[in-house]
Image (cartoon, rainbow, N blue to C red):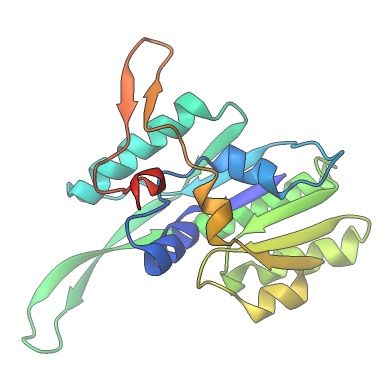
Length: 206
């Protein structure tokens, strides 16, 4: 089973590669982790819908539709954004801000429940968030027969997660490059989903 911390992965890719590799085929990436003879039990993608009406929000909506249409083994679990007011230190003006909530809690609940219900032998966690150390520690204590492998997004390595898991590795550029969604995806209803122009196709680069 593969568990994906959506925003941790997104911001890691953006920090390392800008607009490249965001049109990521998450199911294909998950299969890329498996060794010969292993089977993919499922992929769980944890994210939250942004509250603004910016281009970023629209790109996220397109991407989620593409994942639903193309990745048959993928389950999307939604958190939420909490609205809060912040104050500018320079001018004392107030402005609205949004904070992502529930993603780490959702991941912890799912990975612990799946371990308890024997839904995996090996769990891959794509994240660099040290808040996820406790569920990995609990699995190690109460389910020592199960392995937890942390796959760090670019520039998101957590030494605490490394120590809590059975093993770890960093997701390299080649893995991202070879696991991109098609530029155009046909839906079951006959519609088309097209990769946002701002998300550069690695194949188009020289």
